[in-house]
Length: 147
Ligand SMILES: [Zn+2]
Ligand SMILES: [Zn+2]
Image 1 (cartoon, rainbow, N blue to C red):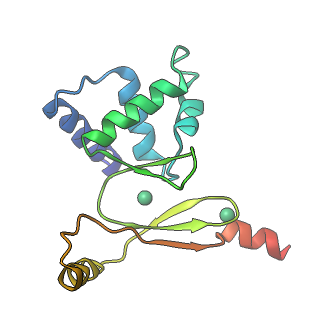
Image 2: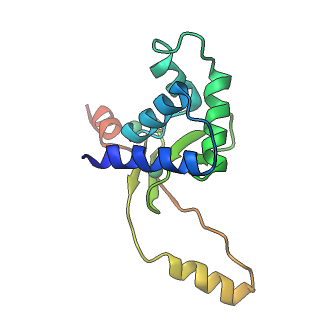
């Protein structure tokens, strides 16, 4: 069984446990999120699946993503505009973001929990999470600049 299969199976289990109905659309959206590493927008998902579900709208996709977010299956990455990106929640990871094309790539970097602890002991805050993003130019865009 592939990692992707396991993620999908676990996600479906979570939905069952939280009594969220698993419709064919929800199944397809989850599967797309797990298989695409691209942190898609609701619009990207809609475009990828509209052939399969002709009656589905972008609003339906968005509503389903919100349901997934509420049960903790996906994270919504907001960047101050309407085009939120969605990320299937696996393990804690960070994002490097291309300033030219907007591509978001995952990378793992352990150890920043210390920052939360330090922030907490310095300020007395109860820390919920932190967000760190790295910006630059992706290999594709760097290539285009050179040529
Ligand atoms: Zn790029
Ligand atoms: Zn990610």
